[in-house]
Length: 254
Image 1: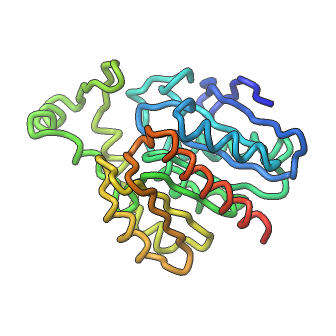
Image 2 (image 1 turned 45 degrees about the vertical axis):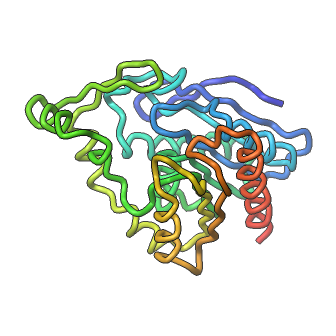
């Protein structure tokens, strides 16, 4: 059963969410985070939610503040803010019945946030990423020379994404540079599944292979053949979701 709802973040902003309550709950839950400028309604997150709910997991997929249907300004986005929101989402899901076990999953930037959240969420027992840049999250790499010059001169940058004009300030980039994803992955003491599309056009699949070498005892690597970054092909989405659902089920039994 799905329920559309909101819950407050640490700033009092209402975060829009979809809560999946299984017919036969197993006391376990998974929180899902979406990609940059996306929402909780992307195909891979919906597919994952259905698969996890079907085997008894409580699932919460939500829009980070300033994204989708959540309150807040996109310009105030930061990794730190969204990490805090993921912590609150875990607390919320535990209160709703996921008391025995919690896992985290994120697509692209949501995966980076999930991994960075792990040291701050002792209750989280496993994490899975889909198409995430784990070898270092440097958003400046997505900007052209003219945009970087504009950011340096005015302290902000406007860009278009998904038919919307959005804005970020130097604060977003400074905050991102305060984190070292490779260090967190290297020091992670809980299982991590890295799922990556073979033909990811935004984050080369080579980065997934490199990331695995950072912590081979903890990382399970799965490549989805022929798939793109958003897993636009339904068959590719089904493969990725099936791998993560099965892996989460196994991890939750330890």
